Length: 118
Image (tube, rainbow, N blue to C red; front, side, top):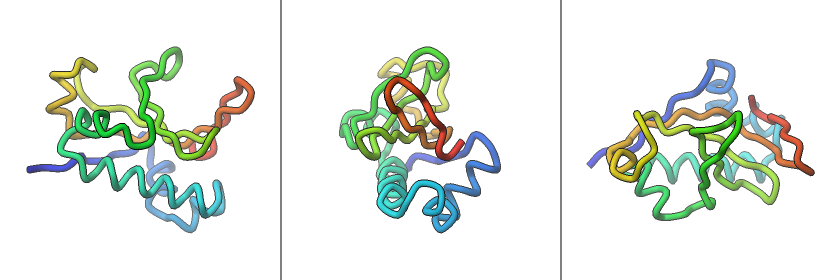
């Protein structure tokens, strides 16, 4: 049984996600703890499909400039943006997908997108 491997879109994002004091300064203590909880939940899943089935954080597929990515709820407006690293997003492929890339933390506010951790 394996778990999901997590990579990051850039070294800057990796630094923010691996240094929680740094992230707390950017998004706050409560939000940082919630992000860490969601990442840990993903890491514990056997596949990305299993994580989707559990519906932890209401993961949902994004469109437009974030097509192929999923948003996971942190608070009402704040989302963790991740991308499963597999050839397509059909359920059969996602069942064997065990790697994700973290894009960052995004604030949806009145139809505006603001990257809090880009």
